[in-house]
Image (tube, rainbow, N blue to C red):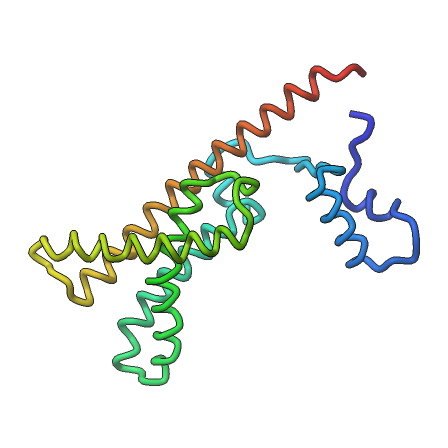
Length: 189
């Protein structure tokens, strides 16, 4: 298409003696307003490519690392007392934010559906709803509500729902990519 340029070319064409950061901010503001549309020149074609590209799935890998780190710190802080403060911090994230966050990402895979503050509030609220339900279910299992079953069930829940969210986000991405192709094909040359 005639009007397509790379981000670097667009930044170099912007007028004024502005620095790179102010130019990038201008590009961001135009993108948010809908005046400018950024497209990936080499978009991922499969779910595996989508998951391995950090520009699309950084949130997924961050959640995965936080869950694994929280589990490791919970079990090593009893032998290494210096990790107690980190255990409190990661435990708070692990229980009060991550379960709700992955559920919000799964329920609202399109980034435009919710504002960041709404995502934060829903993440905390849904965590406060989901974690007691997991505890209630654990209460009726042979394992009961002890440290090991709670940590394991929260880890499994968070990782499974984050995979569901990743698949849903990929499907939204695929549909917007195919819509962009249809719109591009309809435009006169």
